[in-house]
Length: 520
Image (cartoon, rainbow, N blue to C red; front, side, top):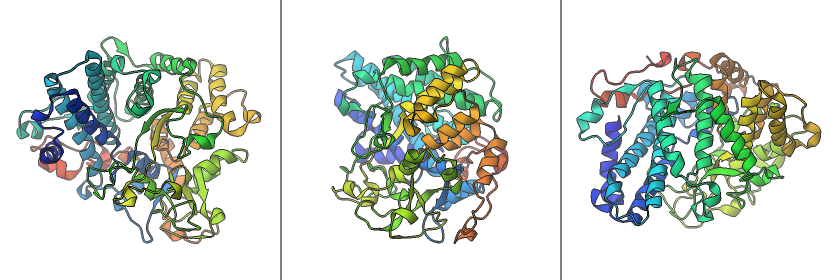
């Protein structure tokens, strides 16, 4: 459980010196400890949430090596995940390890010889916001989870720490985020070399995501009823809309005229990016499954195997391949977004080695480019120097559009059209829009970026089931139809994961249990 995470970090301390009590002395020490919390936030290993989220949804098949691979992802895809298998263990451990690092920082920071109160406030705010991020991943994947607001004195305290309701977890997340918000910088005050660190706008967008999911999923499915508030501030529709419209009117960001340039490997942290996970090949790690990975491991999962020619694209592992359903979602005039998002290997390559569940399509946004091949050593697969774009201005426009839909359809349509016409030209503009229009636009705009699962779930379990089940309909003429056995989304899983059985067994009897019906 959390106990195992704490034990893992106790074992790591002699190697890293980041979390030892005697290392918290200078601001340089504090920065190293802060980086260790960010490491848990960007670490991928085998549990990269955007990739797994796409596989769960109607946008991607798990695919992989011939005969199948990554059984834990396949189990999630097929709604047959079992707590005893430990398929959710990596995600659980990463989140609680990050919380442990955050709590260690918060306990020890008073001993730092701070030279600037502003720096101290900012570091503390970043750590609180990152702790909220870990709890956000926990509550949206597991629902009822233990809260760890501080370092506990003993192992027994971790073993007896009770699960909290989703309402309580969301409340704690809001508390951390609203406490952090005033002391984080605006993006305009962030030097380029500090890009990737949290800003006010990143937290505003995160709060918007949380609000939408809380209203659309946590309330109807998990039974939450309490408002999202802390210290007199309620995160409601009015607050979120005001935050999104402030970002829109501020001119701090813009839609790049060319959709393709948003994802260009040599155009990171561009004017559309609000938050990127930063990756590099400098660590030159060969640590498979460890904590020393600083590269974008997911890149190797996306590309085709043994592409011919190989002068542009490096060989990948052919996971998370786009579905026929996703490809069919693009309108004929939406060729720019389609080509940026979906690579059609059957048209654009002379040949390649088909993997399991081969559709011929691949996630073009993050396929490995030969020109950016890792050069510093280590295992090439672990060290791709490509940032992951977590938040961008297009999302802000579409969130604002969704919130305005009923009360001011004209303004909602204006924001919607800014995203749509950037990709398709002014002739594609609509005069009025519906929620279905917004969901379509979100799907084709954010394909391959990990958004779709959460959009489906916040629209309702039956809605999610319809779209996911239909994505498994195999078109005529497909050479490998037997690899696409009919999937039926099990609504009693609620789209969530079971608490790993090993964690339940580590806790004291009766402390942890499964609340999601499918896992009881």
